[in-house]
Image 1: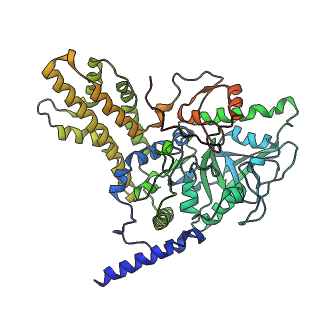
Image 2: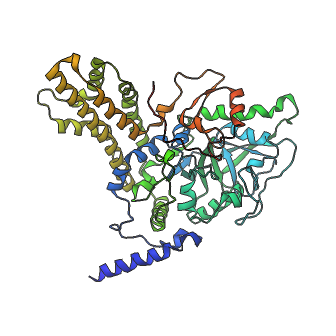
Image 3: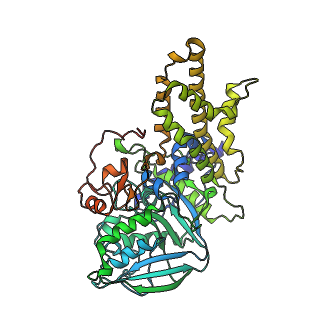
Length: 527
């Protein structure tokens, strides 16, 4: 019984320390050694299954602009690699290479925007998101606040760059909606406030904490993906730094750059092509793997997880595990979990929308059978065996090598099980009606209700895409920090540059403005 007493004392000690968490400078001081595997804060299959839809969507949206804009409150971290040779862009008022932590963009227009905004207020230490310019972490920013034209720097990775990726709209660090919770509650341990500290100092704070892990930079997303590179002198070659045209010249029309930035961003809705980001899904650390309180107090945002109410000891455990995963050496390639969820989503997505819109009876059963016939042996039908075959079908090729793989497998399997069980339930109900009454008296109302419940639970971001596709002078506009109003988050639509400029002037900014009570989300069902 001595080990039970020791364990109880150990947990009590952690709980006492947890009360001090908001005032400590490092979660590492709370968990300097691993907790027992059987403790109540550990990741577990039950939590992964209970949060299966959240985990599924995190994997589907990772390193993709569209899904990460809709499911913007990411609560997971991944190691990612930027391969050698990748080109990156940096806009600055100065031609010099930054000597403190600073930003890099993947898209030319993203970098051009900040180069052409000569004052560069949104990346200065007293930026547009609020701040006094106080930098408690490092020396003053290298940014120069001048009124003349800026410079576009082009860098090339001279070796693979290993970064920590915070998913979701994680660069929206001043938003009260919670897209940066994983940074502030888990990683920085509630020791930093971007509103009072400023965005440049926030980046420096991440780098200071990251140095304890051996992290050289961070991948985050706003209107485009960005890298916070902690040391520009390590891992990057400066290819060029060219002065941009003055804003008063015909070439320097600054009012168009914002839309061009958004246009370039929109090309990455489905992911950053060119293999410029390699995500290690097998090393994913997700708060939903744990018995974490992910409650969002806003009724209209209940589908978006937050860490505000999470137990500090739980956050400390997640921090410890994420650091351990980051530090491990492995030659095993990551499982392609995003490829798995892509196949599942593409298989069922359009047909679920089709069924949700009250199609005629004969088409309803036909579509159900198209989805399920593969898993039925008509010589000797077994409902249980058919659901098992359906649920495991897309998971068969995957080998789970890490503990994270096993948790991801459990989450995806929970999603496919719910899909397959619902569809087989509908099939059985319809066939029973056909047998009893014939085709003309089949009632699909119960079936449609089940489809609606399934679709609402799955909450797949592609159901919000603009249909039909936008014209060449338009983009499908979903809210992306710092742009967009509330309606565009729930109902993205095609807009041109004039409309985008008008939307910028609205007082109803989704990310930083006053959020009205919408009484819940609009339906995700197409008409």
